[in-house]
Image (cartoon, rainbow, N blue to C red; front, side):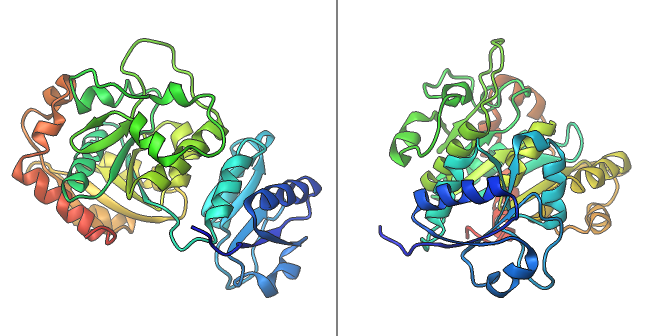
Length: 348
């Protein structure tokens, strides 16, 4: 559907960012205004549809909304993500690799519907149950009629598909998108993915083949297609640094998981400092009588407690046998997942 051209504000004195922004905004059909510093940008900051900030900008004007996208260069490394966290940027675009994604993002910014919601799940410590929770939440959302996709965000996790189903389901996996660039047709994207439990999923292969991680351009194309194809995208982020630098920044909200003990709570606190500045909540895995109180953990982390992951016999075996969806049909799991989705406020 036709929509109004987005008004884009670029704040950067870097000539490379200025030239790239002109080219990308023109491709997106938007209008660009450039300010070389925050002083010149302040008058039109809050009226712009999208605020792009170059990595040469180190501080923001007071009492202004956070930047929509931080522009960076591949040579800047991890420092770019630390700057994004400091500035509170909603997204990060590493140029030139993410140019196609940024053009699509800016094109959608003039539309009233910006696509589906991305919900990230990440374990504050190993064994917190992030993969299990991700699968159960995707299953529950699909059961409510929400078009849902589950994404495996950990290339070193052994393949989320092995926990989803024991069947060899046809469909594309992450390596099949390694050469993808630009815009993917939503219908073709949906039809290309394997399905289980009522939801589509994109997994790393559950095989011993070498892992070839898609670059920033392919990642951006896939995430853009997911937003345009589904109402809810659940991402099992994983705890590797790659997931924190990419998938976490794609999320509209993040759910952090912890086990009910002191060591896990401390690990979750450390990880919380590495997450982007988006809405976040806490899930705690159920425990025994000696466990640390879940509300106490949530209060210590400064996060709302979204729910308690039920402890069920057979979860470990079910994960190994691809039977987590069977366990997801049990009443305690259904109640848990429904509560979490309702408390997140977007789907009920």
